[in-house]
Image (tube, rainbow, N blue to C red; front, side, top):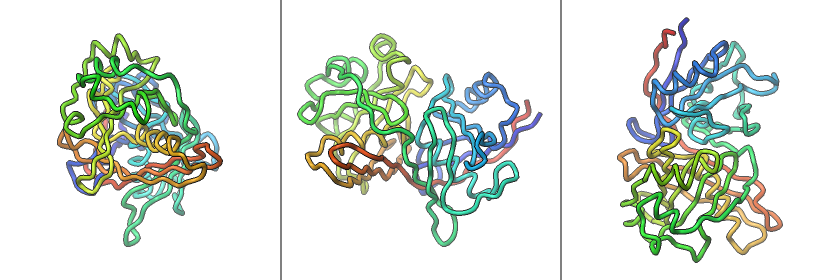
Length: 301
C-alpha cells in the first residue's frame, strides 16, 4: 500500500526556514497506530493526515500527530495543509475552489482563508476553532525549572504565567529581555514533574522585541510530545494574541502583531497574529503566514 506525501516549510517565504510539515494527502484506511508510526518516522514537529470530510460542506477531516501523540489542533499543520491542498486544487476528487477551506478536527472546525500572490497560493490564515480560554496560573518558579530561566527574569507585571488555549492548552510566560529568551533551555525532567501531558502540551515563552521585522519573539518547548523545541507554533501564538488582547483595557479593539519564532534555533519563522475583542471579551483569534513547498514522495507500507 503506497501513500503520497508532501513536505512544506510553514511560516516562511524561503526554503529551509519556518517549521517543516509533512502532509499525507490521502490517509483514508490508515489506522491511528499507522498514522502515529508515520509521524514518528518523519520526526517533524507535526505530520497531518487528510481524510474525506464527514460533512460534505467541509474540505477535509485533518488529523495532526507529533512524533509521540495526536493533537486536537495546531497552527502550522493547518496552514501548511491548506497550502498543499489548495496548490493541488482537489482533495479526494473534489475540486477546491474559492478562497476558503474548512477542516474538521478534534478541537472543532478550522476555517482557513487562502493568501494569493499573482494568482498563486502562497499561504493561508486560520481562525482558531475555540475562543480563548484561560486556565490556572503557574508560579514563576515552575517556569524557571522548566526553562532554565531565573524566576526574577519572568515578567509578571502584565500577567503571571498562565495556561491558555484556543484549541490546545499551553503554558504562557512573558520574559523581561530578549537576551533571557535566547538563553532558555528546556528541562525534560521538570516537564514530567510540573507540566505532564494531561496538563498542557508545552511552554510558550515570549518577549516584546522589535527586530527582524517582528514585534514579539517567542519560543515553544514540548519535549513530552517529542518536540524539544518548535520553530513556529501557530496554536500557541493564536492563543497568545488572544491573551494580549484580553489584557488590554479597551472593551473593543482589533489587535494585530507580527511574531517571530525559531530564530534562536536557525529556523526563522514569521507569524501574523490578530484578535478581535468585543464588549470586553475576545471574540476571535487568527494566525497566518506564508509557505514554501519542499519535498514530495511515497510511503510504502
